[in-house]
Length: 306
Image 1: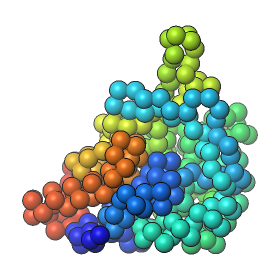
Image 2: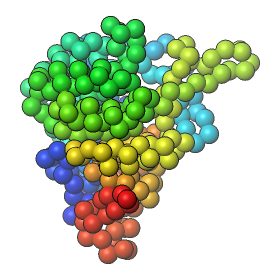
Image 3: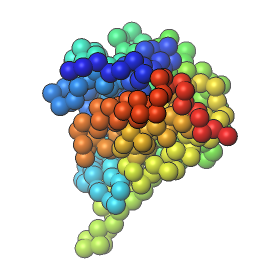
Image 4: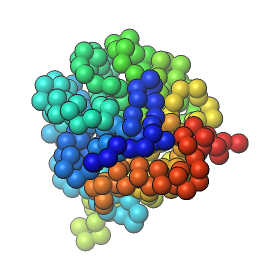
């Protein structure tokens, strides 16, 4: 095991990370599952499995469906709950070395608030607020679709924690730039985008949708050009740091997101095809920087913004 080179050092919302590469929520477990596969010195942070205040069993029926250049998932936020995470998963996650990002979802503003209070007292470095969750009091429309709904939940969670609060935006928002600005104004310290795109699959033999919930989330390289465009738009509009994600599978992909203005990147679906994807991407970034005489990420971050 060797330390990542200093050229990759990144600060995100005041938290130092060895590299700008983060294992994305829902694809990296709680990090320790990869401990014997990946050199964690090359992973900047781990965004743990999406948490809700109380544990959830997740969706029934098919949960994963491969599609060209992508993956559709309908996991349903299966997780052990915030309290169980703090007591049982967090200590091992903390011992890995990378910064710890707790991804928090909820079905009501009140469950978001209580989850944030518990995580505020825990040894996590960031809270990543997943506003793609359905608002049960608004007929199931996700908090991350309408800017005013997002503004309310971010504003109220902001009052419950002093931890760096990174809000994860849905690409299904009515207006991604308006959404980003609303979250920034409500107190977000940073933004991460994009979450999965709404999609579906049909089993032509059964003549019915593959997923019990009909619609599910598309991720992987298929969404990368759209995610990159949205990250670019948001980076031009906001002052807070942005974490880019959506189909990143290579060092070149990650570098493009940084040149679009992202402070860091998350790698998700690529981990299923290559469990060492985060490490490989970080190493590839370092090699590119060395070959091009780039001494720090600050030299290229936002270079493509016009």
